[in-house]
Amino acid sequence: MLKMLLVDDEPLIVQGLRAVIQEFDEDIEIIGTAKNGMEALTHFANEPCDLVITDIKMPKMDGLQLIEAWKKEQPETKFIVLSGFQEFEYVKRGLAIGIENYLLKPLNETELIETITQIKEKVEADFQPTGDDAAYYILRDNALWRWLNNRIGMEDWKERMALYKMPLATEMRTALIWIQPMYEQVDRTADGWHKLQRQLRAEYPFMLLNPEEELLIGLMAEDEAGIAEQITTVYEEIGALIGVEQCFFLMSEVGTGTAYFPKAFRGLEQLLQERLVSSPGTLISADKILPHRWRPNFSQHQLARALVLQEKEKTLTWLDNFFIEWESHLYESDPHQVIRVLSEVALMMSESDPEQLLTAIRRLDGAATPCELKQTMLELIHPFFDRKQHDDNSKSPIIQKIISYVAEHFKEGMSLKTLGAKFHINAVYLGQLFQKEAGVHFTDYLNQYRVNHAKEVLMTTKQPVTAIAEESGYTDMAYFYRQFKKYTGYTPNGFRKKEKV
Image (cartoon, rainbow, N blue to C red):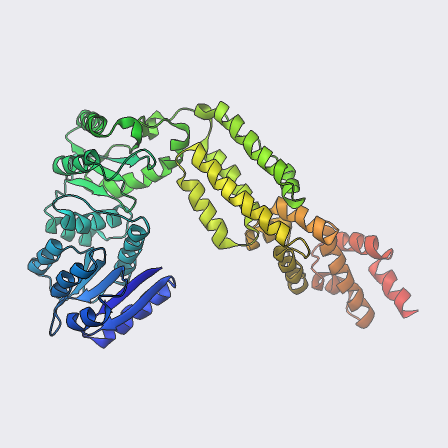
């Protein structure tokens, strides 16, 4: 949980910040508020705090003085500065003492939320900036990262680039390269890694570290030959300092002007899954991807049955066989199809838990190697069967939800597919689980429920049969007649006459 302190001598600003932050993320604890730096330092400097949002101009002790004093007590705390002053002198002082971002009043709510999000990612990743100008680069990298993600408007972007004295080339050829160190192999506290950062920053104005401490470099040259030459240079520098086999390299298509970089970044995000079928050290680019001639075979019914019957060993065997077959066709496979299959399996095991499903999908999408993918799946499978064993004596919560939903919405169109989408569960798995726990196929259960409703209305009202069919959830009269006779042995009119007699 991110712990945060709000410091401002304007009560309305503090109230507004508190409201926005608490609505944005319940997983943020505001440890307190203060009217000036002295009050903040006196009451909160000894309490654990990840982030302080402070105004610059305040009585007794201003925001910058607070930051300088606070860092002596808690050097790891991060700071966002609020200012109604646009003079660069204030910003330069903030850079010198280390701030994450400065926000001008009146506050832009979106920019505030994006900045807090990035700081939260850094705190969770235990991000440690390095270099002689670390404070300056934290602020600049923050702006660059948000711009690549389309979180800063063009005019705001131009102002910030002018502030950092960065070029805004319009005619030069440009491309973006994303360098991702393999976390288990690269020591990011080593001198080589630090030296690489300093060297690349000196050579490329558009070099930044993202919240995961990966390198992104914007290349600029007169022509595409110049871009290719720069890529070769970067590759050689990384090879000399840390070893190219320790990293993944993703390269965008070539465009024109620095304004192309956000589009280039979106293209790089689409290449991320290609890491699964590429060797570390090779250059992954859209024009060098090999044809995908192999796609995984996937029998959803077979796996769903193993999950429903709680056959853990069969499920683990399926997983082993899946990865053995995939790795034998690794370099000709379509990684997007592999992720799709594993996402379907995750959907089966999430059982109407959207948060668990979202976490699993994010981990699957972010995996860089088959080993990471398999570990993610194992971390889903074992808790799934543990939970199943614990809940064995009663119906699954998801089946209870489905039965309740049918009772309330049987008049509406529904199927396993629509219910699966609504309750975030694989439709095939849901069908098999329903049959196991309810003792009938879902379609039979739904038709039986609808026919029972129709029987009651036929007995107690004089409504025409067409109206009763529609009220019972049937839009096709022929289908209604067939189902009614299947479950009662009579036509609707015949059933009504029998009941009257």
